[in-house]
Length: 51
View 1 (cartoon, rainbow, N blue to C red):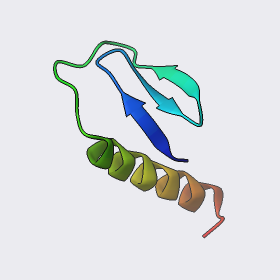
View 2 (view 1 turned 90 degrees about the vertical axis):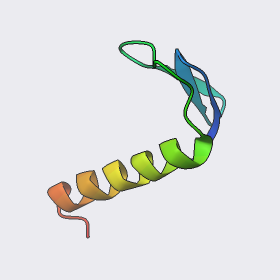
View 3 (view 1 turned 135 degrees about the vertical axis):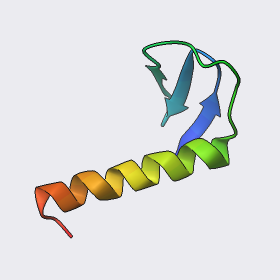
View 4 (view 1 turned 180 degrees about the horizontal axis):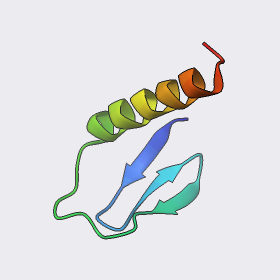
């Protein structure tokens, strides 16, 4: 999953906008959100037993 754009209201992944439940107070960097998403994806895979 590659994040391409971030605003206070949404982020884009592969051209699709994914909206936050609540707008962010500030815009975070793509690198910060990518790290969060990679960690979350890894945890989900562990829970599902894929790792």
